Image 1: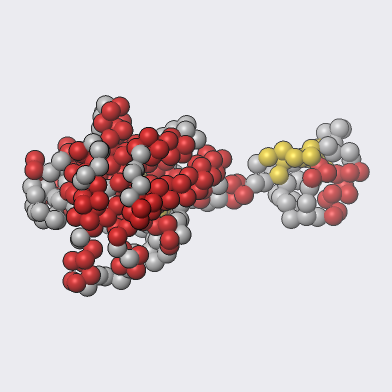
Image 2: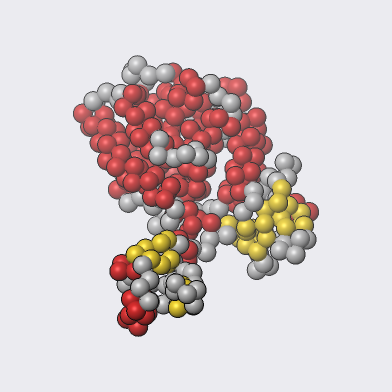
Length: 352
């Protein structure tokens, strides 16, 4: 809701609060749609200012409200302002071998994040971003750098390691810029031949970066971010401690970004669906010591929010289950608590 001068009223606006004259007599009730008659009546009673509904007041879900919030608007404006700068920098490197300057990348990072008071909100803001088809590869890496900055404090990384992780986010998928968008963002399942070509992006990125004066973790993350702790990854089927710690973190960030970013051909997953996906594969493929604190913090960020359950009812996320992070304890409006970890019949459909 916002207060505006009566002279600024336009037909179609909705009055948000009852309007009284100087005698405390009701002139217009809340919920009235403004038309010429309402405007004449307010002029007759010399009403100077009124309260009207804003677009945000009509939002019904958590992410709709986020998208309309002043914080998201500041974030998205900064994001759209720096995206062409980041994109040009990476293209110039690929095509003309113009060196990547890490200070410039970190300036891009801070130009965006300085607009955000609560850095955890960046995850919500990114959930509402939809890049153009031409920008999707660049947005994937820019988003990953921003996500890295959110995850780093959860893992108690030092300021120096936080910076390295953010820089890994900017660079790790650079090899995809050597592959066609039609392959990278193909909505259908890749053929075996296409998947083999897709997998070359780790080596392509490594070849691009290996001779640059970069932190070694950035180069290793570029090469190893698709390795998995159980040896099922690529390109070298490395296991456990053979994989660089920053590559392990980027693997989590990469998967998280892919699941939460909306695409033209599919809807993004909500946070509890993302957590469930990680829980299903995490113990074998990702480093549990890194993954669990990230998942716990993602879930805690949703605590206190309303969710829509598969039975059509809304409930409040009351507590997180550390042993089943994707299945919290929820509370119905009447106060009844339901532990989703022991109630397989119910699922969280969306965040309200």
